[in-house]
Length: 161
Image 1 (cartoon, one colour):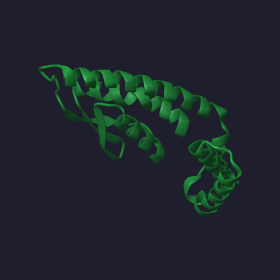
Image 2 (tube, helix red, strand yellow):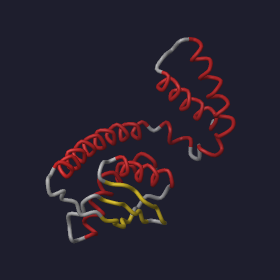
Image 3 (cartoon, rainbow, N blue to C red):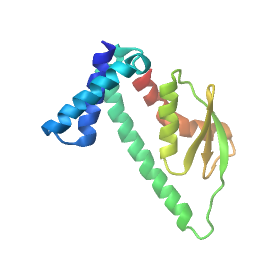
Image 4 (cartoon, rainbow, N blue to C red):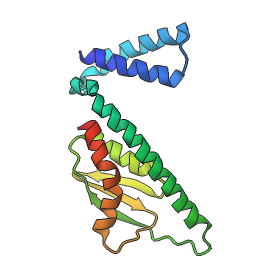
């Protein structure tokens, strides 16, 4: 069953990436998906039943909406800082506690933070993530940390855990 789930996921991903349904691309996609599913199913698919939970896909759609909104806000913030004559930045690295249990969830959270302009995930150590931020606004670092992490953490947890 693991192979079947990975085959379906990789084949759908192949169709989305090639964005064509011509017979050559479909045959190549089937071949690549079969090879991938037999070689990597034991590594990547730990709990295959999670792939069939529709609520995870709905949470993923909500994650995309939240991520796009946060990206737009961050782009305006960075543009303001770049265009302002005084260049009002206060960079620093903050340490945030993450309550996610799985490595994939932590990785998705770190990448989401990195892809938001003005922030960069530097390291994940245990249950902490170190984030470089272009402008630390609060004197209370705990509040700054949680403002960045909390935006995505509860949604990522519902998708991957």
